[in-house]
Image (cartoon, rainbow, N blue to C red; front, side, top):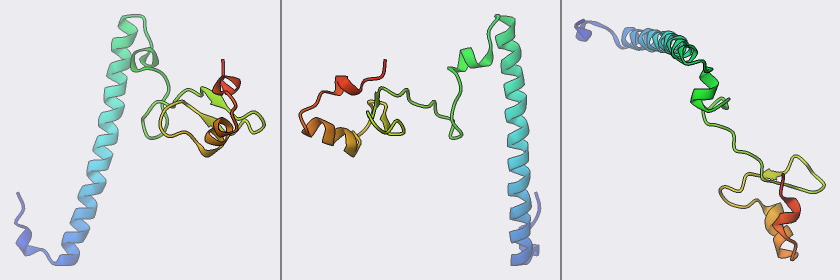
Length: 105
């Protein structure tokens, strides 16, 4: 290991920056290698990686929730049925209307 006491503070900051960059690069390469190996294993069983992992994911890595309810006049307003109900849906229920009217088949 290197004796860090010989470095100035600016040199240590640069060293840290270089180390972080190298770690990021290696992690990216490891991920590519792992994905390639996983595809090979999946192919051996006649499957795709997506079939094993569970489909496409969002940038955060989580699967996108399926839409279960849609606003009747604004199709951009949706709810998956998980988490807190959005305001538009609460208003719909407060007006005495049924959620079944908004359910997506």
